[in-house]
Length: 76
Image (cartoon, rainbow, N blue to C red; front, side, top):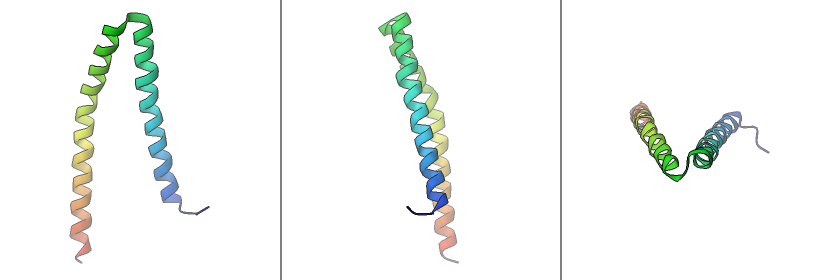
């Protein structure tokens, strides 16, 4: 087992995010489907997708800026 704590933190954060998204989509939409029906579950799914669009755009912008900064600092 390696002792790279940064890799461990990164892996743990990825697992937490994936687990949270699975709970949100599977359990959340499953409960909506069980209580209100299929139409409400589809609407909930579309609302969740709409909410993740701005979040995804922010992450793409941040990763792009990180890539630019790392590439610019490599020349020094």
